[in-house]
Length: 434
Image 1 (cartoon, rainbow, N blue to C red):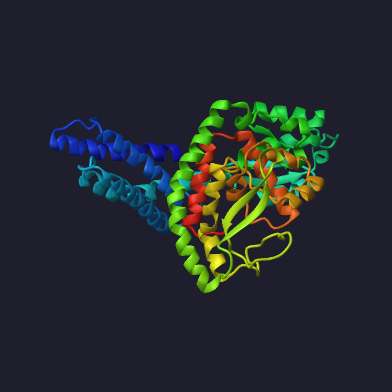
Image 2: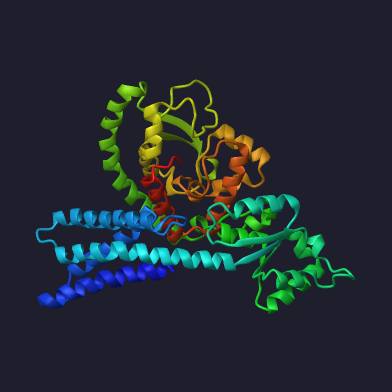
């Protein structure tokens, strides 16, 4: 549905341009106007995604406001870009009518898409054959920022689905009575022939079957450590196994860092002045972090806390060490800007796992299986774990984030990178702390 909305957005913009071209007797595909039209379409896609027009759980009024903000931002940006051109290629007719049509149009279409997704999620009725610990985790996770909505109807141990003389086909009966559309099997369930046989029958009747790992991957956007063995982590990682992706990722990192550099230069005097009022001390914060292949580097940020001695402790959203100014810098993500220098030095990427301090890495490697796998790729300023999971301040949080990082490693691509950047911009626009 979102792809359809994106396609309709492009069609509307091009149709408006075609109307103007017909009225003024010129070819809509003539250059450079057509390239500017395509640039406008792409900008609208990016800004409306960043504004969260298609976000779940919001009212039509909120969608209208976000649509106005997204479309308006795209038009303002394209207009600013056209200031360097002596004759603006896009007429005001195209820009104005695009605003008038797209703002209510996107609000209506995204509301219909949300209603459709909700109905589809309610229709996706799931039974999970899992143990007690997995049931508690799964029950919690299906309600926390899922990639696809579903209704967990029942979660039972696999032993309860083994046939008995009294119940020769327990899984088939549950599927029929509860209108189940998806059966999830943990490793124990997969090892029981009696359970797999019943699942195969359900599959032949149109019910989808997923392992617990695949369900987490497709529906929740993470990989559960309980389902992983070391051999399961030997999947292709594009940054390592796809040289073309690695080169394109580096090119995009440098490009975005170049875009961020003027912003950093403008921010330095502003942050310095603000610090005089409520955050006296060094302007920058420097700290050792672990990067790709376990190499330690120094990360650079604007300082947001009172200077402290010794290793830094876990940081929490309401940390008492945060100054008023520092808290604001974090909410606006301005403190991250100096990291563009780390990107230039190839120590950081724009998108990747969060870099941690060496002493935390040593601790977490001892207690969390496969933790060192995250160091196979370059860490990032933002990442899948950062946009999917709330602020991490403990070993348990690190374990949860690692599962999202494994998902990123498995699905690493430019499309996913752009998706993460879009969600990060949405978070910044919403002024959410990381």
